[in-house]
Image (cartoon, rainbow, N blue to C red; front, side, top):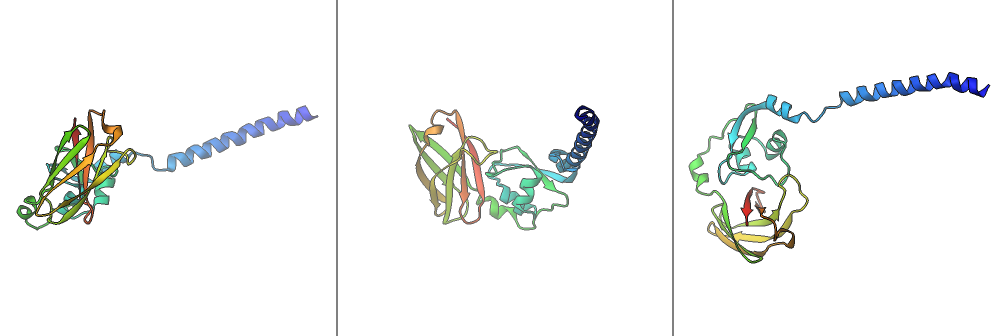
Length: 195
C-alpha cells in the first residue's frame, strides 16, 4: 500500500516542483536585469569628451547635474577615474552653466609624479589656493579594494609638493593609478602613472 501511495504522490510532487520552477522563472524575469548599458543609451541626451584636468564633479557642475547622476548613468564606481578622450554620457536635457569657463580653466588641477627608488615626489599645480588633497594609489579604477592612502598635500598659491613612500604592493607593477581628492569639495583628479 505504501508503494501505491508513493507512486501516486510522485507525480504530484513533480507537478508542484515544476510549478515552483515556473513561478521562480517568472519572478526572475520580472526583476530588472543589468541591461544598464542599453538603458543608459536611451537616456543619454548627449556625450561629453573628457579633457585633461576634468573631474566628474567639474563635468557635473558644468552641465547642471550631480556626480551621482553621472556615475549612475555611466556605471562608474569610486574612485571616479576618467581618461582623456573618454566619452561621458550626459543626462537628457543637460545644459551647460552660464558661468564663464575662462576663469575656471586657469585653475585646473594637474600633478606630476617623479620616482626615486621607492620614494615619490608629487608636484601639484593649479586648483584652488589653500587646498588640501588626500593622495591615494591603486591598480584597478573600478573597485575600492586595493587602494592605499599614502598621505596629504597642501596647496598654497596653486602649487604644492608632497613626498611619499610607494606601497610595497605597487613597487613591481608596471603602472598604477594615483588620485588627488580635494578634502573639502571632493573634486578628484586621477592619473595612470607608468613606471
